[in-house]
Image 1 (cartoon, rainbow, N blue to C red):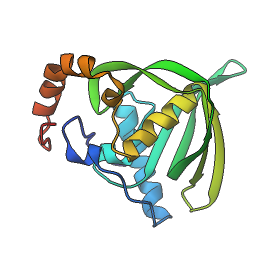
Image 2 (cartoon, helix red, strand yellow):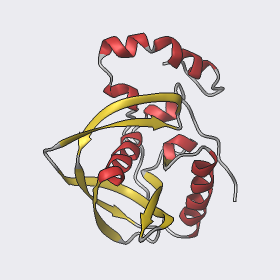
Image 3 (spheres, helix red, strand yellow):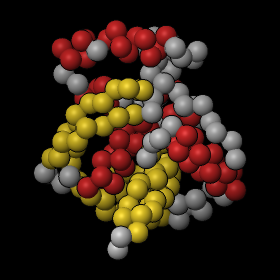
Image 4 (tube, rainbow, N blue to C red):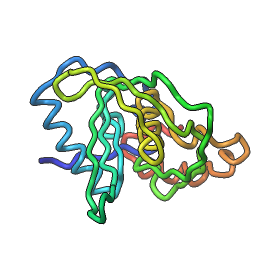
Length: 178
């Protein structure tokens, strides 16, 4: 298992539209392990492949859950996810991002989504996600399209945050200074 470097604001890979996953099997399984370790190391609950420098449509989620008084983690991997249905009702949630350290932003998203995706073997699956799972799935899917939570800010708030974003970008050796 190898923890991977989390790419931060300013890294060009975060703004690319990721390519579809075409190879399934042991390499993707190892990538899952490495990404989950990296996500855990950053205290995250989701991580998309572009955040570790890989421009492919793949994400992992490790969402804390409690069932019958027992705490655990719901692990989910998605290759080539695509939202096929979403609610008209909107929920607002404060979101953070491993690629934007120390930044939290209120984001409006559909309350629930139905997602078609592939598992680690390439099997086609469908998931209806609501609550926090819906938020995390949509957040990580945004990364696959080069979208960051700062893109949800009104222009004035984004301008006010520019110096903080510049500091993050300057600490990143792969940054191109957005």
